[in-house]
Length: 225
Image 1 (tube, rainbow, N blue to C red):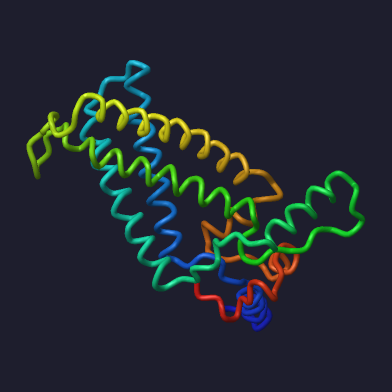
Image 2 (cartoon, one colour; image 1 turned 90 degrees about the vertical axis):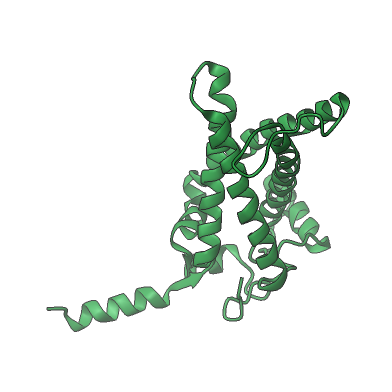
């Protein structure tokens, strides 16, 4: 039988939570992560000599990634705050304050950001550009393989054009590997686990909110992202 105190504690715990990532956004994030890991595995494991039908798995994962990215873009344009990832002079100002704070040339701590600090915004834009480059070039490369939907046409482009397609695709793939490693590294650092938890469970505590965010820049009561 549940005691009144336990009910009160549970209610208090729920009220202490602030939604940072909604369920649909978390599903998108982890589906994208799974797709990227499959694409990385099917790209580089065959180079190491592991033999399996990687081509089919690779292009299917690429199509899944393309679909969820399109869904995310549409959702971001019409149902989310399009300014949340924008970079302005205030972000640059806070970055300079942080540098001075680290170098001990500033006595006051840097101003708190809104929902996303500058480094998260820069990472988002960089990984978005790389993923779009992969999707664009990968979509063209689908013309060189047989699928249940079309027959291969390797002569669609000239040899030089195909060469540039592969250069951009391979460069973006290598860059994504580095970006993923950076993402994992910061995701498991003790001081960043509160952000990782929010991508798993969707919420942060009010103490984390007060410690890491400016409530005037991220008004959580009205936030719908």
